Image (cartoon, helix red, strand yellow):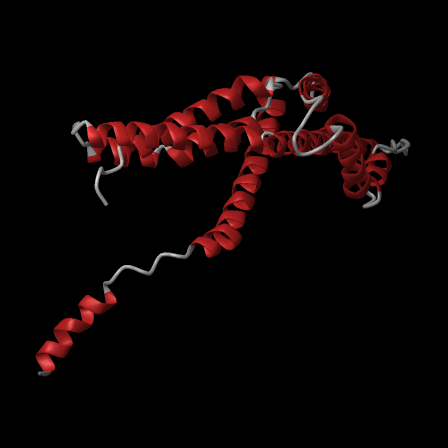
Length: 254
């Protein structure tokens, strides 16, 4: 009897954990995954910008990210004149970004501190002191460029996140169309006694989340200006295709 109890203990401990329910995934798991994706994208975009300043565009410095911010603002003003979520998206989002800039960089004292460290130090006539002052001035100038680039990259990131939020109806519409198309093809395959492929179903199911996450991360992390529709439209179509194939190749009988 004791042997049976000891042999059943490892089997019980090796049982897989119970999957979370729908509301737990929707209200807890999904928000944390989205927050993690946003933080990783912001960190990656900052690292790419720092590497670019150090090796690829050292002459431009923070002006590179500033030019990207201005170009992205133009793209947003041209392409998002209407939205299902906001009545006037351009005015509303620009006011949000201005408010975020005021809170994050002005009211926090960040801009005032940047201006204070830019104040030059007068020469003392001592060679060693002047040399140290020159090195400190160079270090301050380098740090100033990187900190200004951080501010511009953060503003670009906020703008791109807003564009992704305004693009949610596009992804929802494509997902609905993909589900409807897949269910119709599944019924045709069911009543026509067509071939059922579990291989196709499992591989298409694995592509649904990457088809949505990877383009969003690439868009948020891109160190250059990119027109949103060039990346979001193919991402939505790829996600819809993956959903359609997944639903269409689902087993015929439950």
